Image 1 (tube, rainbow, N blue to C red):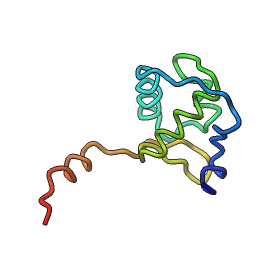
Image 2 (image 1 turned 90 degrees about the horizontal axis):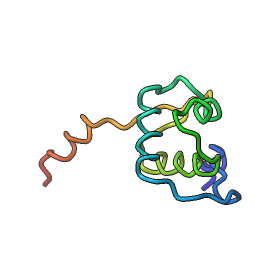
Image 3 (image 1 turned 180 degrees about the horizontal axis):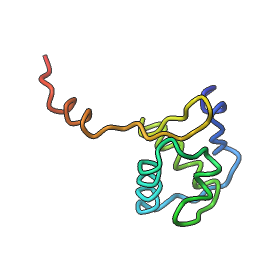
Image 4 (image 1 turned 45 degrees about the horizontal axis):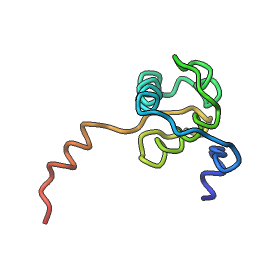
Length: 95
């Protein structure tokens, strides 16, 4: 919980609407294509479609919780999920 305050998702104080699946996919693809180029506010302003700030924070928290994005020391949003590594993990023999 302490880390979330540091990353400033602030979803507890903002009334949000649940995003549609196409919105989640759009934000995730945009972050993947522009990984490490923008900080949080810049990313929000550059998105192809506009949305509420609270919804955007909710999406970032969702992507963060599912290990799809990271935020570096300077505050840039980075896409970190790797389909190749996920496939290797899924097909790995388990003992």
